[in-house]
Image (cartoon, rainbow, N blue to C red; front, side, top):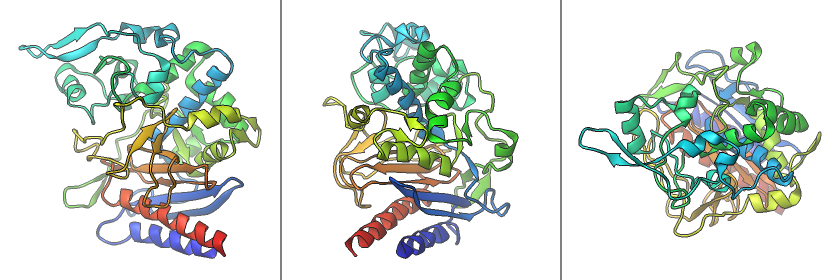
Length: 397
């Protein structure tokens, strides 16, 4: 598909040149059979080593779908009841209380939740958890009460109060980190080991892990900060920890983009991989459907810590749902993505989509903070649009 390569190459070239640019990007698209586009442009670190397709990225929240997959496998095996209390599998979650604000002295006002958190709610982000960069209450807990950042990989970072009673609304947060704890409780081993045995090895995913090998470390892209004047500043001392205290199912993985494409292809192929089946077709079919119960709905993510996130929303004005565990666009997207497709993103401006109807998906990887970067995010949408235009033109020919 010559038009696909030229169109996508042009998007990457535009994104990595000029005054407003990203330091570097790797972008790939796939159909059910294999990669149909692969490109790298710019640098791993500003004006440094060139970006290559085997560059390693901190993939942040694009970890979530992989953690969800391990939970779905537990459901298939009859080991996990999605509507049972999650504390049956991860007892620590049963100790958490709901925060109702702060008293006159600034101390948190806490009460017991009206119901137990369930794993279904965790997968759907209705469990009651948030992120400090999207929620003012968590931000205040961090600033005034020493609540650790989730990027610390610490157990203390997980054990936050609930923001509301479980199941009462949708709020994006550390729910999938807790799903990882549920899976660990069921399997009796670290989440990374479960992922390796039950997802990575069957799919042939080698360079993906919570802890990088020396070879992966040497090829890791530097995270950059977008400065006030629109420039870029390398954050040489900022990285997700190797050997974390907790394997964070919500955000902790490092990976190359080619490895993630294998995971996307598994979803395009009804749960099958080259080394065996990862999920049953019927599991895939229900897991990709939006499952929020009105008035629950996916909302804009307000960036309350400007260094970590801007206000962020996919396809403003269009209805979005949440599945197990992806965003579902309920309407056709302007990129060409049809209704019912799934996808999500990672904090350092990585983005992916999976379109089971058309049979294509893709991943766009940069390493920039804050999230919803004004250069990287629109360029990703341009990339997705270019893929759809080329694929549709090719199939019409």
